[in-house]
Amino acid sequence: MIEYQGRKPTVHPTAFIAPTAVLIGDVVVEEGASIWFGAVLRADFQPIIVGKESSIQDNVVIHVDVTHPTRIGERVTVGHASVLEGCQIDENAVIGMNSTVLVGAHIGKGALVAAGSVVKANFVVPPGTLVAGNPAEIKKRISGESAWWIENAWKEYVRLGQHYRSLLDR
Image (cartoon, rainbow, N blue to C red; front, side):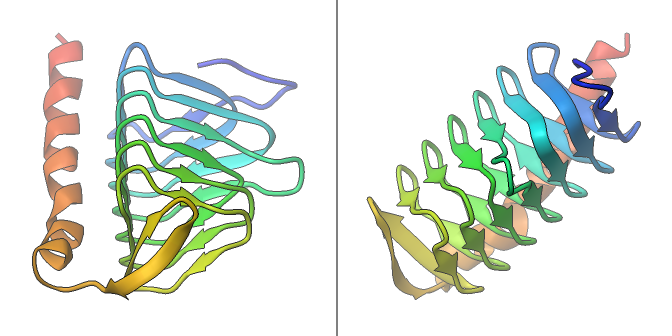
């Protein structure tokens, strides 16, 4: 964890921060959240907030814009190697692996961004919808297996984060 211009990361004691994750500046990690190996959260201009029980998986990069913080709601899953910059991700959303969410974009509650998608700047993804592609387009309402994944993926990462935290506390 690195202090930047008098601002330093704040991490809830129940959160898991992997030893190779880097948090810089005004980063807030709430209760039960997990920041996995190789993730970089750089809040040098605006804050980054990672909500309760959210998972920021391996090699994710989260940054901010001069005028846009990055806000990640509760129980959000951000898949491996994704990039988020100056955006808002509402609760229970899933960002698929290798996706990019650009400045000013807003991912609604329970939405799913398919793996490898690019959500363009200022694009709004309605709650409960699937978006995919480059640029990402709205494909359909979430149902079936996708709905199950959104409701349950975060639970496994909370459990896994607690397990890893206990391993590192030894």
